[in-house]
Amino acid sequence: MIDMGEIMLIDQRIRSMKEVRQILEEIRKRREGNWDRYGKDGSIELWRKVYVYRGVKYEIACMKYFSFNREDPLEAKILDMDRYLILKCTEDEEPIAELIEGLNLHQEWLYADTLHTQYIGMSLEEQEKALHQIAKQDIDWLLDQSVAILRQQLQKLEEMIKKLGEGK
Image (cartoon, rainbow, N blue to C red; front, side):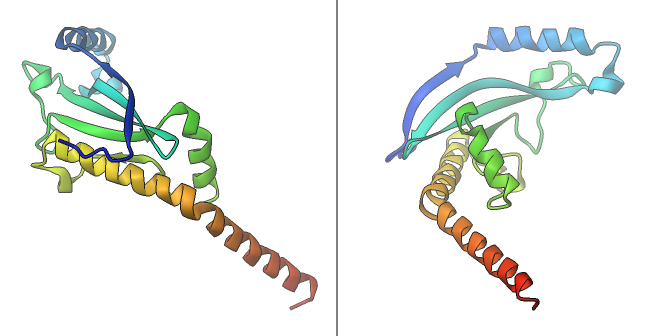
């Protein structure tokens, strides 16, 4: 079981396998005849959970990999995984993420996925725990360090500008 500590689950959406198969058939119909353009593989969201930590919301979604190269597309695997997780900020936090990235303060704030070799062999619960840890670190950084870092950078810029004015 994941120790949630100060993290609270505030919303979740779960798809049945019947829904997943219906989505898969819709994808097949759209792509058939255009495999070169759309490819034969992809992912379908199985579930999405919304959490809040220190007042900041984030989402973790479970994605099911598929490939129409297999008789049963849902039996396909990528990096030896048939399912993987994605961490991302919610729509409400998107402007913060864009500002942080735009200012080059933090890359991929509240974004990560488990499609990497270090997650091979981990259970979904272990992957989810790792993503919660990343989310906590990113949120702690935002609330505890980001403004101070920005102020330091602003002060450096002001000093550089002042030196320009002095002709140095």
